[in-house]
Length: 343
Ligand code: ADP
Ligand code: MG
Picture (cartoon, rainbow, N blue to C red):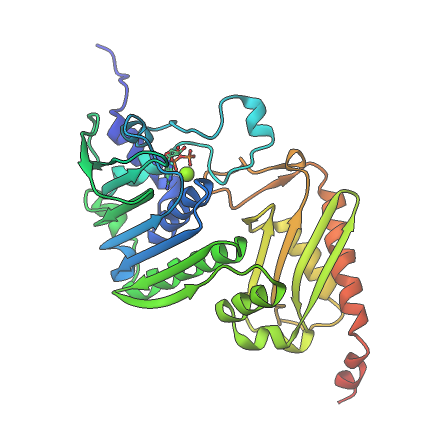
């Protein structure tokens, strides 16, 4: 008798979901990134009970056609890449075609959409089912709403790892902050238990961008930060670095984006740490919101399913560029430092 058998699609998806969906915050990231990829200008996020009971993301993007709706829930189904070459220079946030399949395998998911140019809206529902989802008519303006209810209702072992409503919401909010800092041109709202937590209008001018940063981080950050913009060797870095005097006891105000994607990268962290080394007291952490732009061919984002990690083709170059840019900016303000040291 054969010992080996194929996993059911549902179980395969649930296992894969473990990599991208640990908590509500991960779902928000995937859904909002899908909205951004669809060209949305307005994105509304609703959460109930830290996102465990309900998560809803509504956008005014290009929508999904009737025939594509059930397909969008299948694993490895994507409209974003076709060939390996596309992956080399991926310009969208998504490309793995896994998120909706994963989310629908661990929640009660409803996907409603009206494709741009169509006068009909359609809906599919999925509750971790193996079979093809049924498409039914619905009412919806152009764009898409994805609703995920009762996270991990069918995987109690996972559910146990969820923290309190408050903790889950704070992760969720932080994820939304990163997304809102990555796209100033898009309006965002975040509601929790029917209370508006953030309502952000599109920000085109620098002053509006600064306002968004101040609202999302801390109003004092802007008063204690310098704007930097440096270009060289095909790299651009831009954003705000907190003054050494505005240091934090934790690294809770550190936002770094590579080609518009929030990342946590050891090499980047190291370069920034080095730049601040002489101006920060031991154990203090800098605050910053920084954007690095480079040719997408020179950075691999397909390192991990969550895409939090990236791999630079020339790590040394990127490291030195970040270090030099920040070091110079901090050197300009350093004269204040000796006084502080004398005391
Ligand atoms: P990926 O984003 O990696 O392609 P997903 O599972 O997140 O995979 O989504 C599958 C497909 O469903 C996408 O490629 C896209 O075509 C479609 N889709 C998902 N969300 C939206 C949305 N909000 N608006 C338009 N299309 C969407
Ligand atoms: Mg996606």
